[in-house]
Length: 143
Image (cartoon, rainbow, N blue to C red; front, side):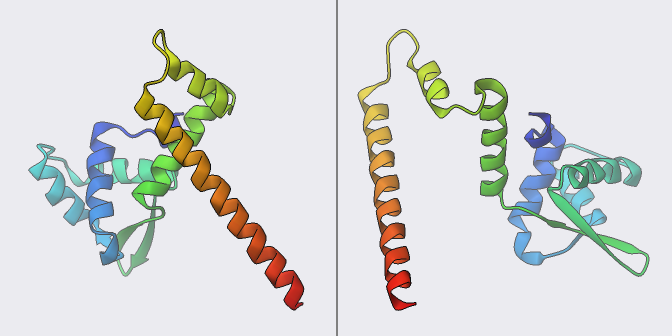
């Protein structure tokens, strides 16, 4: 689970990186300036250490141009969260969505709202699967 979890400082860095993902590449000095607004006054080596941790988690990548190194995101916030949830599900519930859902029941069961949300989700998944099958059948007929 540690792979897709972030320390508070790493989370701040990634919030900045995701907010500026359209910028493509960001220099370490820009990250340090942002972190100062969050109360982190770091020396360059400290900031570099945090960025390296994020690179090791494959969330960031870097490119070197001349003597300067620039950083960019490897996955969106949504992808990161999805991978973290899947990792947690695998670790805590042996990958079983059913076991996870049963753990949510607690002493009082699922609320009506949660039940409706789950039913809606299942319905949407079935519709997507039916649409995918229709597309496959259609493409097989044209071949």
